[in-house]
Image (tube, rainbow, N blue to C red):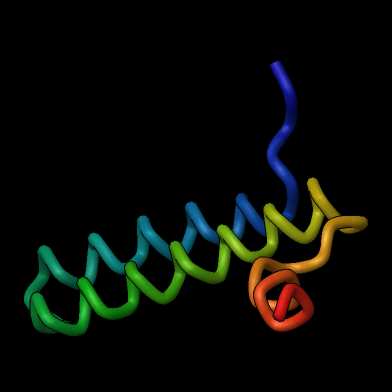
Amino acid sequence: MATLSPNLRKFYRQQSMLKTLYKQRVISEEDFIRHREQALIQSKIEVEEREFPYMPSLKHKIKTSF
């Protein structure tokens, strides 16, 4: 089994903390969802940059194709 990268470990720790805060009613449901979405987007960007560092982004492809 592969070990998790430091960024993924950080992501899972943050998600666990957010769930705890939400269950204890420290943060609202809207804040919980907003933070979760931001973390998912950030983790996706980091994974893509790590796995495909040589590929230009889709925005770059669209800009250069016209």
